[in-house]
Structures are given as structure tokens and as C-alpha cells.
Length: 371
Ligand code: SF4
Ligand code: SF4
Image (cartoon, rainbow, N blue to C red; front, side):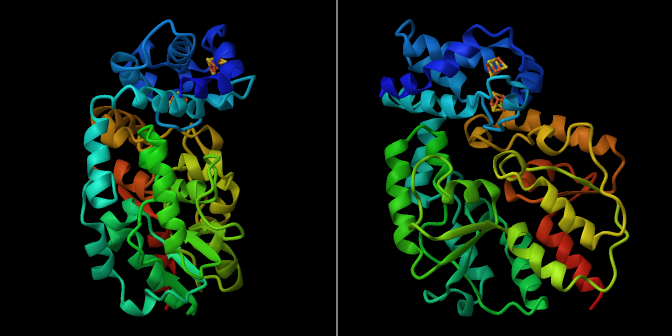
């Protein structure tokens, strides 16, 4: 498995000799005020593991967990290094030596509940969704993902209500036992577990030809973005904004909301899937006021701390990163923060001072006001 890091020898070498040009962009290094967790140090450590200079277990394994997978560092890298991809490989190498502190617990929760939190998300799904939506024959299905199913009333119910208002009656909801895209297993370095989860997921999608993902991370994983096939060849995966945008273009709300909104870009939506402009167009069609941008915005947006498995491996680090991002968003003076990811909502909606909305909640409000 240590040969896994050999695939990244060029990137590891680039970082080792770099004067830390991307240091300031790393939300973990900023939140922790630590040199040990800068992209440069984490990559240098991975290079030392690759070259056999240090052991992949224990201390090194813990350091590799301090990455949100946000890809912000790549925006400032002349080599366009994909630091999180390399660090996830380093986690997989470490995992071979035994799970890092905090990782075993998460893997255990994944085993008994199918999600990294250990929550009864299948009960939530069946409580929130009418059985008429849970049909195997549906060719277009919503994949909620484990994070959205922790609070379906915020992330799934509004989508179903919105589709109803837009007269869309052909969309079902994926009701299979596998409700996690497998990203937590990948983040934990458990590649075998990820592959097993992927084959369960593939089998559970029945006739689906199009999958609407409520979470951009799930969308990226289901599209095969991690380099491993997850769904059957030819299954189209779209993000929620991608599915809704043409519908709203065709039937815009009768009047736009008078809202003061700052948008928080989810890393997977904007940096990985490049949907920043389209999601802004969508918000612009339901809000009558210009979107308020933070100093760190679009492809340069700071991560909310919700990525890379950090919320369940290192919750205090995730919280520090969330506080940092929340403060940037609140500085704009906007009355509401809108985002398009259940993970980001959970990270940012914790102190109740500023309203935080998921995209579907905002759009539903616009159509509901104008009924
Ligand atoms: S990712 Fe690029 S900018 Fe950052 S330390 Fe490595 S080589 Fe330097
Ligand atoms: S992906 Fe994000 S958290 Fe990870 S090293 Fe790069 S900037 Fe830091």
C-alpha cells in the first residue's frame, strides 16, 4: 500500500521544495495557528512516509487527518497540486498500520449504522418520505445522503415540496439501505470499505438513469470523482441546483424575495464541480437583491470546516474552522447566509445569530410567498 504514495511522487516533491506558497489559504492551518498542519508540512510528512524515513502509523496518521479536502490550496499552487488527494492516499497508507485515534470509532459507526454519526437515518427517511416516492421503477431519483437524512425537514422535505410546486411528478427518492456515498470511508483511509459500499450502492439504484444529489460531496463521489466507479456506467448524476435551474428558468417565481443574502460556496460544489456561476444565477432568479459576496468567495471561498471527515475525526478543529468562516460571512452584514450543502448548513448554523438556509429552503420560500 505504501506504493500508493509513489503515484504522487512529483506532487510530493514539489511541496517539499516549496516555500509554503499556499500556507495562508489553508483554513486548518489558520484555525489551529499551527505549522504542523500547513499543506507544506502535511505533504512533507507524506513524502517522509513514502521514502521510509518515518512510520505511517500513530503521530503521522493523526496529522494527515487535519485536512478538510477543501482544495483551496490548489488555487494558489503553480503546480496545481491536489494536496487532499495525496493526503487521502497517505491516510489509506496509515490505515494499513492501524486506524488513527478517532478513526476506529467512526468506522465502527459506519459498520452498524451506515453513516459516520451512528444515527438512525433510515428511520428518518421513512418518517419524512411518503412511500409513493420510494418506488424502484423511478428513473429519476433523489439521493439524499447521510448528512441530509440527519435533518430531512431541512434538506429533503423542502425539495419534495418545491418539486410539487413546480409540477414535477416523475421524481422518486432512493430508498435503498445504502444512504451514504462512502466518502467517510474514503476519508478514513478505508479503501476496501469504500469499494464494498460502492458495490452495495450500485446494486441499490434499480432503474435509475438520473440521480439528483442533495449533497455536492455525494455528487462528486457518485460521479466517480475519487477515481473509483460508484454507479453503473451511463447513470447521470446532477446536483440539486443543476436539476432545478432549468425548471426555475422556465417558470420563475411571480415575484422575487426582498432578501439580504450572503452565499457560502460549498467546496465540492464550487471548486470540485465548478458550479459557482450557475448557483448564483439560480439565487438571482429568486432574490430581488444582489448577492452579497464575502472577501473570500467563489473559488476562493474558505471552507466551513465540514469536509474531509474532520467533523467526526477532529470535531474541535471543524468547529474552529466553522467559527472562522461564520465570522467572514457575518462581517458582510447580510441577514441570511445561504449555502447549497447539508454539511455546510450543519457547520454554520450553530449559534443562531444569523439565519442559515439551504438552497432548497430559499427557493421554496420564494415560490411559497407567491402562491
Ligand atoms: S501545494 Fe503547491 S503551493 Fe502549496 S506547498 Fe505544495 S507546491 Fe507549494
Ligand atoms: S485541502 Fe484545504 S484543508 Fe487540506 S491542506 Fe489544502 S487548504 Fe488545507
